[in-house]
Amino acid sequence: MEDADEGDETRGEGTGGAGTTGAAAVAECVLCRAPTEYPESHKGITLCPVCEWREAERTACSG
Image 1 (cartoon, one colour):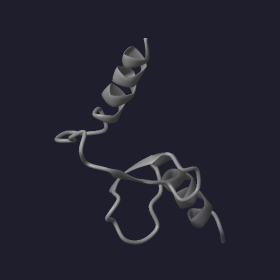
Image 2 (tube, rainbow, N blue to C red; image 1 turned 135 degrees about the vertical axis):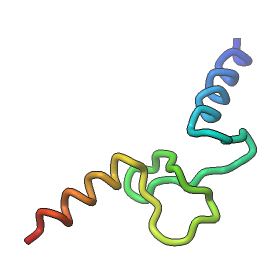
Image 3 (cartoon, rainbow, N blue to C red; image 1 turned 90 degrees about the horizontal axis):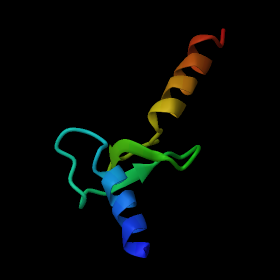
Image 4 (cartoon, one colour; image 1 turned 60 degrees about the vertical axis):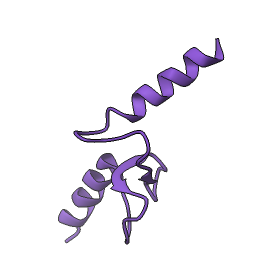
């Protein structure tokens, strides 16, 4: 039964984008800790698509 749960998790990781392999580690969002589209080696602030969108809304309307 545990094997089925592990299979579901690995299946979800590989659907991130074209050419994504299971071995490629992705960085976590610095705000919500969700997986991002960036590799762990990416420098700077890494945000998930949702947090990037919200940050863009905040900065666009701040003034």
